[in-house]
Image: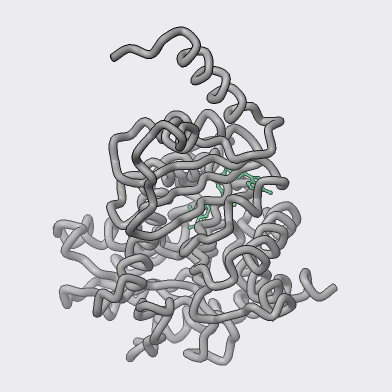
Length: 358
Ligand SMILES: NC(=O)C1=CN([C@@H]2O[C@H](COP(=O)(O)OP(=O)(O)OC[C@H]3O[C@@H](n4cnc5c(N)ncnc54)[C@H](O)[C@@H]3O)[C@@H](O)[C@H]2O)C=CC1
Ligand SMILES: O=C([O-])CC(=O)C(=O)O
């Protein structure tokens, strides 16, 4: 039966009120708007996930892909701009997750409360000629503020940190959580999955294999020489010429720069990053659900080297990072690479720690 005029006007007024950025309540899609007249409640089973920076180049495709994930029952999209539009758009997808939008600092608390997983792609991306560390001055403050919100509103959530420079932003997040008394090293994960995704792709190209059959461990961190592919541990077992090793190591370490240069000022990797972020978030959610044997590379608080943070294979479970794998046997080429990586990582970690404790 069609709605009468006054019902239609009421619907429009309610939608307008909720999509208005000056409104303090979340910018919900129609399902949330009309709780009074809709039978669907949403969010009964599955996990609650928030994306901070959801209107950005990574955030939008990431939001779309998370809306398609059957493990997600509630999806909160937070940004300082444009969430009403992104939320309205994504909320029309006929998948299970209920989507709600949150706009601006005053709605951060609503975005975070009750979340099981928080994914953070907020912050500025590189332009040609910049290093990831050149983003520190802007992104460090953004990550600090968002993590203060997490410590307050959902201290038990798993955090997937994407914002660069990851080598420093993860230590920043850890310091914020320590200050708040909520730090749990098992729940803070720097996302280095794109390095693994690239490594699998480039190695598969060289070997003439399907990338889905290839598994390349990438350890260290997420910038230049700190990205250390362990080509001696590739699965399925294989061997490379020295020329292939030099080519692959260089291409994997500089994959981000390859995209930044190709985009010529229009940002850095967004689509492959959203894919990698969803692959990683899905692994975290399957771990939370209790699935066994989930192992991915991530940059975490770690004891595999003398550094306080390091990326390596970790096993994900109900409490987050349940086991950190040792690096395994390295060849001479990888041992030299490891020393270089550790030197740069040590400085990036210290920079992050000092930022919070200055
Ligand atoms: N870990 C990794 O492998 C990768 C990391 N990145 C990093 O991800 C970050 C985001 O990249 P893009 O999405 O391309 O950038 P973008 O500029 O397209 O989007 C960033 C979004 O963050 C939002 N934002 C800014 N300040 C915020 C705040 N205080 N709270 C919430 N949202 C805020 C912006 O409004 C924007 O919508 C960059 O730092 C980039 O370097 C990018 C690719 C790979
Ligand atoms: O290169 C960048 O600035 C973005 C990034 O981290 C990547 O694509 O790996």
